[in-house]
Amino acid sequence: MLPRRYLPPIPALMALEAVDRLGTASAAASELNLTQGAVSRALIGLEGQLGLPLLIRERQRLRLTPAARDYVAEVRKALHLLASASITLRANPMGGSLNLAILPAFGMHWLAPRLARFSQAHPEVTVNLSTRLRPFDFATATFDAAIHYGRQDWPGADDLKLMEEEVIAVAAPGFPPMARATDILGHPLLMLDSRPGDWGRWLAHHGAPGQRPSGMMFDQFATLGQAAIHGMGLALIPSFLITRELAERRLVPVFGPPVPAHGAYYLVWPKAGPDRPPLRSLRDWLVEEIADMA
Image (cartoon, rainbow, N blue to C red; front, side, top):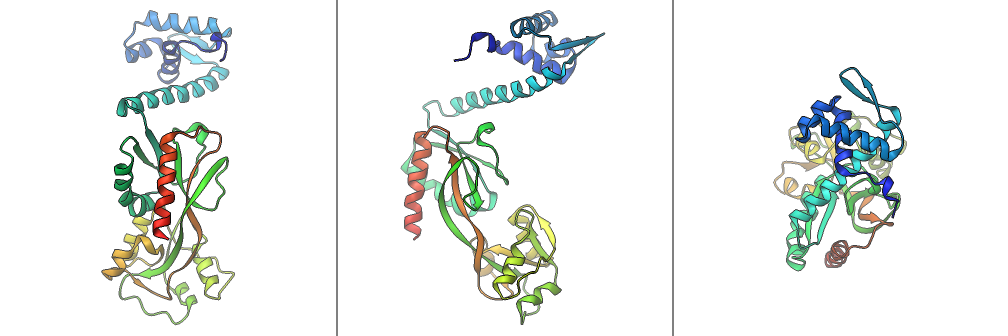
């Protein structure tokens, strides 16, 4: 436990944070529903407790010192974590909540259809889902775990492999047939901005290495797939995401069957974090799901 002198009162920290954003004690007082005098006393007390000045007083405005600006940035994160913890407690007063970061396409097509079974098996666990497209630092985030696509390379994390992936080259009906894989280079190509090398790897798989084709970029498969359906170009999409579109012939293969993708899907969680029962329940259930799929 740190000495108490390094743990200032939350009202004083909230006053400093508000002054940093708003610039005056009166504006901070209005937001915090306090008097201007109460805010001023809280700031003076905070400076006294920490033993250094935090504010530069200029006429009617207050400006944080450079060191205080760095300090309040960390304070803001801590206040956000405290608020998130309180929201989680209110949402699940019996405990057992799990904050999971998901990839939107995988979450919609693979995870969401299965979560009802998890809820039936573990009614004590509340799973909160949020979309994240890129890896993040578990130490500064409020997530217990995340769904990751790629390799086993998330820093500081353990992982559980969920599934391999295959991708298939597709287009809207009406695109001319392809005699060779390299024929795709004569058409507009659609690609995900997080996987710019997928078309090059697809060509290499079909005997045409060394290619780095460019194309129109998308940040999610949902919009990429819709662009392909509307005839904007050829798309390379994981086959499990477009089973309905292929069955209804809104998308058709343009050359060859699905090919193995560059990465796989993993559940990842911080090595340094506590092995909380809700996370352990999700992990064990996913192991069973993977076994059933196999």
